[in-house]
Length: 139
Image (cartoon, rainbow, N blue to C red; front, side):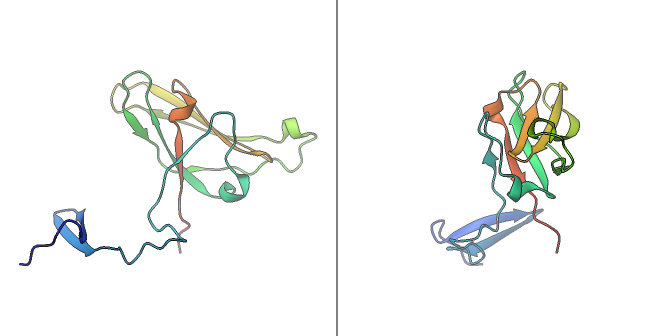
């Protein structure tokens, strides 16, 4: 079995198997990300609607009570209300609850979608600790 230099390969662990891949990784390009990335929500600034409408997202945030990093299941992003009488009434909501694995605190998660964008609100956390990840559509 040959040994690989740490600078020329990356090791991926899949269950009990350790796989060495040569660097640069052949499935990563400069123009398209193949590995999911987390996007930090900017407080007071909605995420772009055109990138999220009709998609599902996963959220991660830090619990204010115990500082545990919490990850959600996938949550659907609702479409804004096309029949709203005004821009103030165009919001649609998706609400979920999740328990922190570190302290069992229940956090309420609200995904609000308007024509201005998508806002992720999580109770009992600092808004700047909320990040989202867009799920890739199944082929």
